[in-house]
Length: 233
Ligand code: UDP
Image (tube, rainbow, N blue to C red; front, side):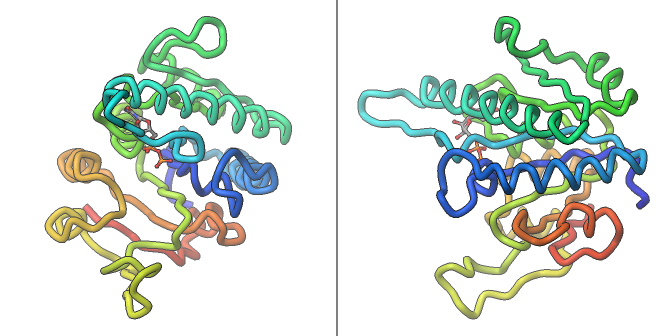
């Protein structure tokens, strides 16, 4: 394992499993056990979780984007609290940091706090996104990865890598083993939003995209037995 500090981005939908909403405790427990192995090997782990299993920017004639996004950010906090509890149950020490006050449920994010907890071997959940509407948790993951100086972002999704087209609608879609961030941006591939991709390009953060349903996917990725798509800088 060459990565010392990683940012693990878990999509909310991938955590929900087949039911598509809420959580699959089995999947979350499996993730917890893999993260435990990484921590035991001395890797520092920050986590960003999406909110798609509860809410994703649902605007309507009656609901503005800003308000819908506030609900989305709160969904990511519910996810972080749940997942951090499951992580604690396997013996991990965790902290949930948010960019705005959530009473006593979380602690306020600061880079100093994040460094302090990560270097103590705690898993740090960066919840609440960037704290601003019109952004995504992909962008929050890029931002926090840059701030904590992560070596890599591990992007765990409900698909096993980056394809040239949507494999759900095109059975001839081809999976990339490796692709550059520049190509992801130029081809507008749907692996992450453009803002996140540009931030990672500017700040030279590579990414490893893989399926959360792959057995030992996180550990395989860290140990070089990688089956997903490596996004190079
Ligand atoms: N969100 C936001 N600002 C942020 C991060 C997230 O407003 O910095 C909101 C936005 O409404 C988004 C929702 O939170 O739709 C859930 O995040 P996302 O769709 O990225 O979750 P994922 O698809 O990864 O589960």
